[in-house]
Image 1 (cartoon, rainbow, N blue to C red):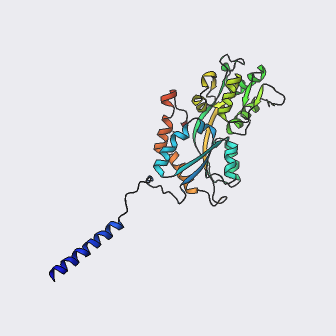
Image 2: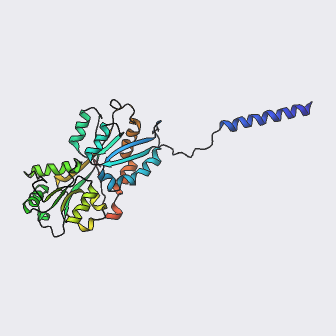
Image 3: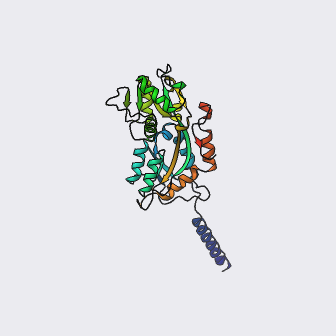
Amino acid sequence: MKRRIGILSTLVLLMLLSACNAATPAPSTAPVPSAGISVSDNPVIRLSTTTSVNDSGLLPYLQPYFEADTGYQLEITSAGTGAAIEKGRTGDADCLLVHAKASEEAFIGEGYATERVPFLYNFFVIVGPADDPAGIASAANATQAFQAIAASGSPFISRGDESGTHKAETKIWEAAGLAPDPAVDTWYISAGQGMGACLNLASQQQAYCLTDKGTYLAHEQRDTLKLLLEESDELKNTYSMLAISPEKWPDTNFDGANTFIAWMQSEKAVELIRSYGVEEYGEPLFFLLNQ
């Protein structure tokens, strides 16, 4: 009888141990979100951004850190700011990272976002042939440089794509009292392409071009074009982030977009951005506002 009780006790003990083991999950190998960050049911964030932060290498550099810290996955598409913002209008993006203040404010006014978060800047620069036929290296500012280019009839490559860079270029022409027309002014070439392609074209034709400094420094053809004018006040280039409003697109990944916006302003991201480009180019490619 005692033996039977002992066997039954052993069986009960084994069953209890088995139940405990079944209730204890195996350690997860999935990314663990940082404290205070919760990955929603949708782990993919569709980020629509301007070419400069992508072509300069900044976003590809930051992406694995962001994904490891939060568990979210970034799906990045890059184009001119006009096209990038349009993806927000059509519901094909959850978050924007762009650089055209007037367009961003119009986007908010239409109800597609509630806030723009300016956080980053670099400078537009004017690059061109080393012999500088228009003599813009001695210009006091970008407006004078554009006037000199037009007066000399030297070739100029324009983005011509309603991007943030193109909008900045247009403002400088307006300040110069000029409105070059590619149908009339043969020296003015409207490429309708991204920044990298425009720099390639400027290199081939030994033409002037307005570009953000980060893309220029990271571009493989930078040695064929000389940086002739930089860091004029009118050349400051500010980037902002906007989360697409669920009031317009209920299926937008609003939580993910706000997680990205918060992470990009975190201490870790700030340090990564500050150091990006320093080792290779001797200077950072981007700067933080209010830092």
